[in-house]
Length: 261
Image (cartoon, rainbow, N blue to C red; front, side):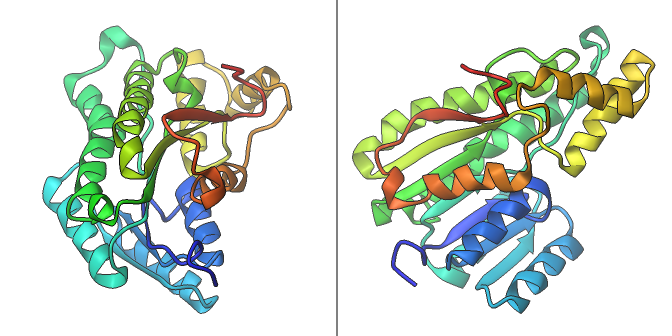
C-alpha cells in the first residue's frame, strides 16, 4: 500500500449505485473509506461487506440536506481516519415532471439534495474535514450530462446538476493554488436503482411501458447501452490519483457518447 492509495475518503450516498461502486473501488485500492446514506441499515450492510473483504471502512447514517448531519458525518470520518483527502459528493435524487405542475416542495427538495448539499458537504470537508489545512485533496462531485443540457420533464434535476457543474468550475479555480483539485463526473444513462425510478416516471408521462422507455433511451446512446456504475467509478478513481493532479475545474462525461460536449 502506497501513500497515494491510503488517503481517507468520504463518499455521500455510498451504499448503492455509483456511490457503492466508488466505495468498492477506493477501498480495494487501500483507501480508508467512510460512507454515509439516509438509512442506517444500508450503511451497516456496506460496511460489513467491505470489511469482510479486508477493507478499512466505516460509515454513519446522515441526511445530507441537514446541516447538523453533515457536520456530524464529517467529524465522524475525521475521527475514524484522520483529515480527509478525497471527498466524493454522490448523494442525489431524481425529480421532475410537467414544470407547470411542479410543487415548491419537490423543487426545493431536489435542489437541496442535489446542489445545496454539495456546497455544504464540501464546505465542511474543507474546514472541519481538514482538507484546507492539509493543503492537498480531491473533491469529486457526481453531476450528470443533464447538467450540461436540458432534460425533458426534469427541470429541477437539470437545474441542480447545472449548478453542480458551475460550482465545480468556480471552486476548482479558487482552490488550485491550495493544491486541491475539484472536478465533476457527468454520467449519462447508468443502470442503477435510480435509473429504474427514472424509467418508471417517463413511462407514466408517456403512457408506455418501462421496456419501451429503455429501448428509446438506449437508441440515443451511440454505444447502444447504459454505462455501468463501475465505469463511472473508474473515472472517479482516476481523478483521485496523483496522475490526475493537473485536472481541475472540469466536468467530464461517462455516457457512451451520449454527450460530446
